[in-house]
Length: 131
Image 1 (cartoon, rainbow, N blue to C red):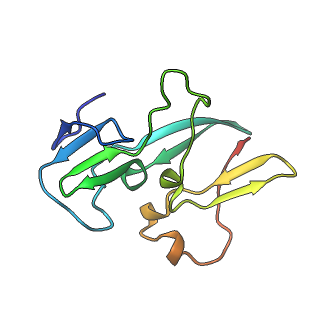
Image 2 (image 1 turned 120 degrees about the horizontal axis):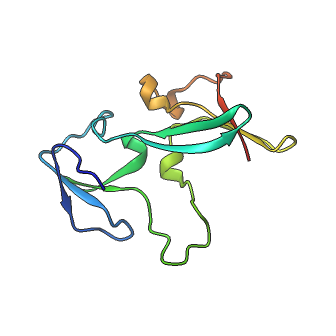
């Protein structure tokens, strides 16, 4: 794993294994803005679709100055290749169409300075991928 500027590796906290100690504490909506974006490539109608997860969806604060990657280790013989959990899905609009077996997802609402709880009830443009 590459180093994150301004953070030092820190021993893990169950169930998280990869943690970092920050130089100082920040408690606001943008507190994880300097955490690198994690992209997952998914098959879509017109080729690969990138699903981008930003700091607020990829790390959790476990101590005042310690954050951990918000991914649990599946063990030596995981039963699933990957599981996207509720922490990663926070503040994304997800649309499932069971009749066509399609899923659509928005960009992170946090990148638009809003959240699901503040988002108006209206249809947005989505990137599409096949289930």
